[in-house]
Amino acid sequence: MKILVMGANGRLGKTLVRRYSQQGLDVQAIGRAELDLEKPDRVADTLSRYDFEVLINAAGNTDVDHCELNPANARLINAASPAAAAAHCAQRGARFVHVSTDYVFAGDQPAARRETDPTGPINHYGRSKLEGEQAVLAALPGALVTRVAWLFGIEKPSFPDWIIKQALAKEDVGAVDDKWSNPTFADDITEWLLDLLQHQAGGVVHLCNQGGCSWLEYGQATLDIAASLGLPLKTRVARGHTMQGFAPFKAARPPFTTMDTGLFTRLTGTTPRPWQSALEDYLRRQYSPPS
Image 1 (spheres, rainbow, N blue to C red):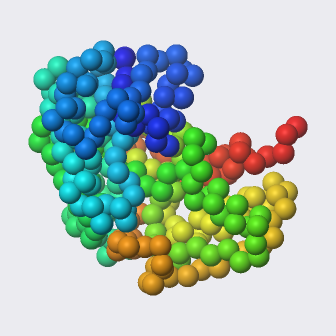
Image 2 (image 1 turned 30 degrees about the horizontal axis):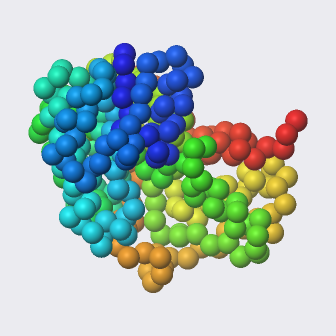
């Protein structure tokens, strides 16, 4: 299976390339320098230069606030270019995996979202990603569209690393307490994608670690694990605050976007591990003292 990964410099793209290379798979990656997703009309020509059987699109504009201020750019990168890539895969008989987001949901219901639940994004990022899902499946009905959330991993610092950095430097560390989703380990996604590909899965599938939590619960779990590792934290307790009036946010965020992973388990026979287990695995790898 020859795999080509779009988004070579992103957290998930770099993880896919690292993990698949370690497993001896035939994997290549292309980044922004080789493939400009702001120019959908050039996507097919660029992809035609590569030899692949599976194309994984881990690229995209994931800056929610940038998308809010630049909706046309968000649609080019998150919808038009993925659709062009899917159409190219359809033409050459290749499989296509497209990575989407929990932000396609309105987030107005506390229950875990299933793939068949109504969408209703409340910001331009979510709208562009939903448009991308629909355009990809229209161009290639057998494509696999995976929704992921709150990615963390070793390739780039993310929320847990930020929380630890803050707690090492000061006594007051805050996290949003009124937004919920699934913290997800990028390394785990690489295995789940292989499971889905081996089972010839298509359509929309939620791909995340089990269980939902708030940013505050996520941050507190991080501090608890960091403390157990002996890190010299200046505080071991995260303080909660709401999204309302949070200065860095330019776009509205959907409050409840925890996703149900039951379909993935039914398709593959694999049950994703809880986010707490994945988080501890990651933090122990990153922050355990040298033996």
